Picture 1 (cartoon, one colour):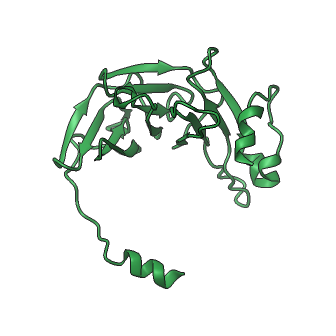
Picture 2 (cartoon, helix red, strand yellow):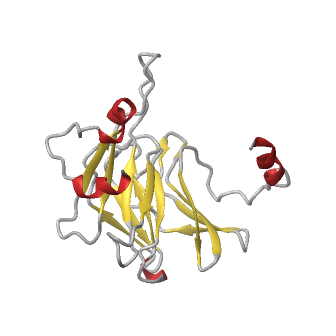
Picture 3 (cartoon, helix red, strand yellow):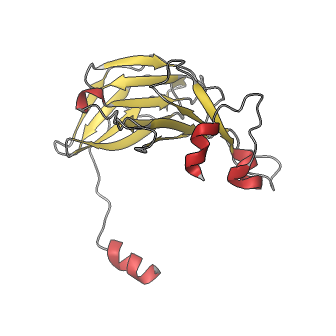
Length: 214
């Protein structure tokens, strides 16, 4: 209940961390743990009239920010996600998707190689702070690498009584030879019809993965 929740978290407080090296707004951000150490990764953003490529990594243990190689493309209001690929720390990476000006672009930063790589573009636009996450299930991912998912585009502002999420949920599986994104759900249809909605597209290629969400 609410009383127990307050009791559990009332000892927590905000602490100021060291400032980033470069000021920015509308940045992509993800926190993660690697080898029992905590980090914050930031990419892109907006400053002084332009979208950015700058990337930084914060180490909680040292309380320091370090520069990472610039992303290949500019990202403003993008989404990002840590992807533990299941084959050891040398395979772990960070994924950045969408944003402005390129709403379908996908990039992967390899921590081991300290380098950016371009992944296949998504089928749909993911323009404003899309949600990105990794789904792991031993039944479909025996090696533990997980399936990458991305959801959302932007919210309708008009009409005022219909401010529902727009866009699609897509997934990407690195093990597939075709190397493409597949559509799972229309977010707008999910709001009205639930998880059993039909895909609003000519090709329904997410049938096999959709079963795990039911």
